[in-house]
Length: 173
Image 1 (cartoon, rainbow, N blue to C red):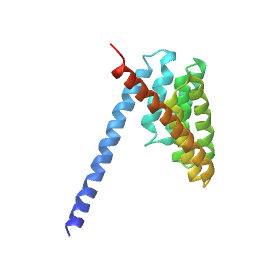
Image 2: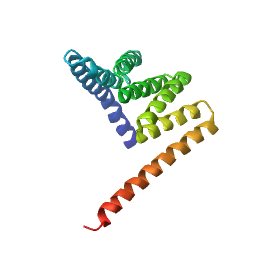
Image 3: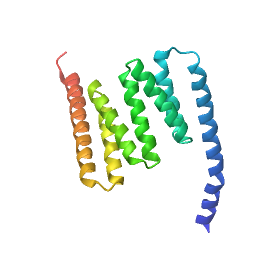
Image 4: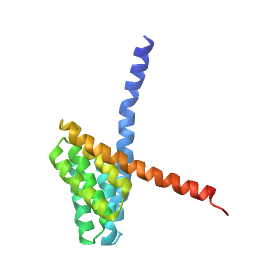
């Protein structure tokens, strides 16, 4: 009976959480949309990516639209960081709607750009996502390869971080 009572109270609050979350997204979306009117074209790719992030959980089609705009502006102004971000978002959106081939296509493009610009954490993040897509497709050998590459990147990054920390702590003054 106690369990049933707790379940009822949790179920009671779920609609409020959903409404609050939607309201919060709406305010941020309105703010970002307003900013688009006041920024130069160079900065629009970043704003379109931020809008994409806000729309992913609520309107995937709108998120795809904004990610494509971010991609267009980032390519036009040769902004590789935002280009990788837009491609990563497109991979995520297509993963969420279970279009795994499209998801892989965008993730693989994003990881290539991340490699070109040397964003190690981003590379590992995207490779992990590619592994997840392969798991969902039942291609476990491919997934394992991507997970191993992800792990290697994290290990190397941690070794460098620890090495720097040790050198800074133990180096002579």
